[in-house]
Length: 598
Image (tube, rainbow, N blue to C red; front, side, top):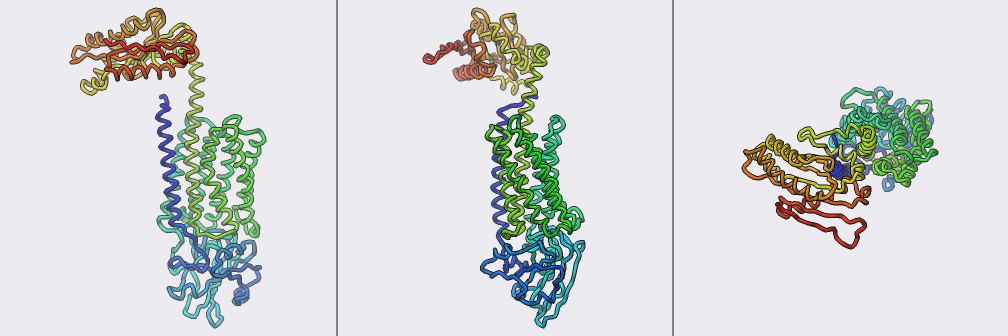
């Protein structure tokens, strides 16, 4: 089947409009649901830490009962809390003050962002200095579907409890500490059900392009389709695990969730670099930039992928190095797109639109992960939504590329199968079809076929509506017989489709002969279909070209001008011919037009 360019452009515009509305809607939702939360604030029954500290493995709770052992930023400067938190020491500490819950229910649970750790210990510090402690290993933590979070129960809290001390052994992430909260309710996270539904919608946005890639790979054996399918699979896995949605459908441990999410983000970003080099058109990248992009893609899979494992042996530096090793990919891929844009790459335009949101969201996530500032975990949705947008836009880019490749291949097949197409005929009327005449149109023009006549049956839809499509087909067959009655070496009759026909003529009186055939159409239809209660007439637009213009106008050019004449003939009352003779290099005088009605 052929591709309708107008329809494809219309669908493309609608897709861009729908995507823009989606982006604006999701951005508004994110802004409404993800307000900043700072130290000393409460979010319903959620309580944040007032103080933090870092130490060696030898320090215990007894050494941390004194206030001087803690870093306690003033409430009026909550940003200082996140800037000073460290995850590169054997032990990280948090302190929650009674003043945060004294007017409400005492906390019973601790929850925070999913990340690797060795153990978490709690101590309820009473006013008399006594401590009630509890210690949990990593595999005892319970993830739940309220964002990428897990929870642990606290020791018993009494009216005499002044503070709750938390000791995190081998923390692998700054947000593990900056996003820690206490709650009086089990399963109480920062994300609402609406947030989780939004995350599920993002996963749905990613699944559809994956199916799209699979269907394209069946007919298009290109590496970039397979790489994009692998990249989408990695992004789906990342969103499921990093967003915590996986716990809705599977019983997965904190260890697995903590590793799989960042690991597949590294794999997805690395595959994006490899996809980039395959997706660009030939010549869109210099040889050096292509090598750098491929090398960066491999680097991103290996290096951030290694630090994503969060081995306890690398605990002191893997969090920072995980983010820093993404910087080469950030810079090289950005420069690769800029270079391709400068070289006029169409693919680069799609990539620039697709990757700008994801690059900005990645920078935000990197700064937050490095502890530059603190924000609630809902800010992760910015990255998830950006991932969804990226995959959808790239899928549109692949569709666009697919159509371009298809056009190229169709052109090659047209040339290779010229003789086969020369004999192609319309199955209903037996006339030559459009594909066949277009394939040899340049040759026909050089052979002297300098008159182009476009014929259309008047009120043909009324025939189909009143008498049925079978009678309509009979009318088309009768019309074909009328115009092909004088088919000889000086005339070629073509059925374009529907009720449109084309006559290509050469020799003297070509316009008069075309008009004679137009006037023969009503008589032939009336003779072949006597049951019709009205005369079926035809309108025609005729172009006569000078021989010297044989290579200056394509079939589509002539069709467009003849179609304009045909439209004017119909507007003037139908059942007539409108004729135009084109003059070579005539810029000051209008072409001569003649109307002729039966």
